[in-house]
Length: 124
Image (cartoon, rainbow, N blue to C red; front, side, top):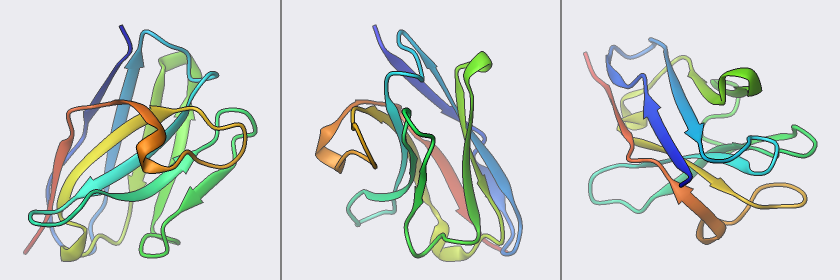
């Protein structure tokens, strides 16, 4: 049974950093693109970043470009999201998800498996 488990969230001051981890099991990172999404209270879930499994290309939403970085460690079955220069508007529950895409990233509805999320709160 495919499973994704996020960790690394917490409370951080504006300008600080966090690194989220997404540990996967039941499938190989070679077979699925991994995306990071977030959902703030009262808002829809939005894409943050993803990494294509075939070519390793990475993609970022405009609002995180230059601040966030996605990476993966196949040996640890883990995908990371390094978040720097955090802002209060980055506060949300962050989810990782696995989906198939030959190129680029899957659309949100094309992700097959989702984690339970980890809370990130940016506040002074």
